[in-house]
Image (tube, rainbow, N blue to C red):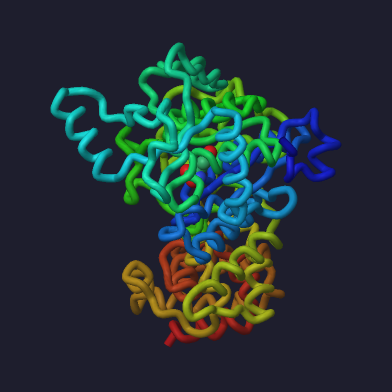
Length: 480
Ligand code: GLU
């Protein structure tokens, strides 16, 4: 059988692993899928192999172009680049049919003319008898000429009925399926359309896939798919089925507990690098290491260290990791991320050059405190918006009549400086000392008037970033 999708690249790299991520475009890219994609991508990048993307759009009713776009965007945002063009499974139906025909010709598949009513009756009887409900092979050895002329049929695999099908799983070990328990699965439906089982096997073969890494919810499918692979005499890929991701309470991951699209994580202010690190640790470990930047992950990643038990979502860990990556990200990059974030708002918020410059100048202080980009953006709003601040409750308390008088008295000393952080701080300190006050007694009303809040990144740095003119507008509003 010709290996049709093997392009020059995979041929010249035939000794290297070829991996794939094969999402069904029936919804967004969720974190479970993103982790599967990440593990495949990491293994491909680690080995110098190839990472392919196949969109499994055979379920016409549930697949949408919006979901395809969401998956591609999610992958791009996560930084998981795939090699070559994405493959669309539905477009390959002809090829899937061709393989079913080859199996028919080789006697490894047969036509089954059982009607829907017949099969329902069969199942009813099995149910009554307390037996497992499965196709009983009634057309397996029957002469197709016995079928009424022009009667519709499905094509079924003539599966082995004895012995075992063993999935040698890299993660879970050997998983055995008794062949007697598996019935003759449908390969082509009565309208000629290929089933999902057949499509996956044919596409994996044609794409030269050497490793199938996917969620453990596909483990049973592996047993089925192996039967088709064996019937075709094709090479068996290495399988690795990833344990599920559970919620923080150990129960199935719910929406409330993080079963969200990667875009939701983006909108909550997590960085792609954080997501890669965090999802890597959901099911893979390297000693006690928690902080594993992507470059390091590519160097270390292996299949042996994938965990066997379900991983647990832990938002606190995610936040801490994100805080770490925010702190080590270059100021310019964070400004660009913040700008992009605000532009995604509805309506989009566009920052002026002046606002960007202020944010950039203040970023070293701002990024120290933020656990998410959202927190960073909210905490820095006083930098990229102009004008007198509306005080929150805590800030209002700090700006009572006495504090306003203090502020008014301190202003001339501040105005006399060259408006850089250290000079502003020195002036405020000298002014406080001269009046027998603590620095905080001057600094707190200053902070409240400048930011509208009772806490902020380091005050005098922020004042410097804000600039003389804008700072004085805000301070003067609260000295009257
Ligand atoms: N299309 C399947 C899914 O989205 C994955 C199939 C596979 O990886 O073999 O769950």
